[in-house]
Length: 243
Image (cartoon, rainbow, N blue to C red):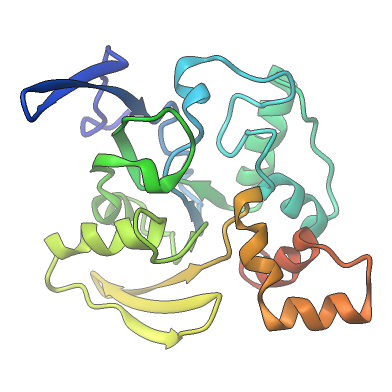
């Protein structure tokens, strides 16, 4: 792997606040970026749930990017591409997902290499002292990438939020707004090429309440009572995931 990835051997540390030691869980991202030489679209999130760091999987988790049984990304992808994945923690289930990504020139590279948590949960709001992955150097090393698909927006500790924080180190990079309603779209120039960023509604169960308040979702739901939050994300994601 590239030299800029940090291997951190410990999972717990502490800091001192007001003369008291505060235990922190070191939330190390368990997966390196999954990028091939042909990758065009890059899925960008933050961190998987802490149990993926500790290896304490649930029965139908998959030990791969977005493999949480509680997540919805692979279910959304199934509907967009009319495919089926196994939801078991097996080598076959992992390989299915890798083969799919390679076939469709999609990669995965979350924003956070590691962070700390005072409470062990999967909420982005609980991320502290995040160390970010060098997305801009990664994009330079992979010139085929033309789209970043943020699995969340610009709220604090979301993937767009961390991306904006990262590019402050590159004052020559300016985001140009294309669309300011969800999914938010921006573009920027990098070494003579244009890259698009798309901030999608997060594919997590915790975001379902926000989806339920969106006027378009309400209108579609009123026309079809069987329409659900995954269906809504399928409509939103499909134009950006497919060619």
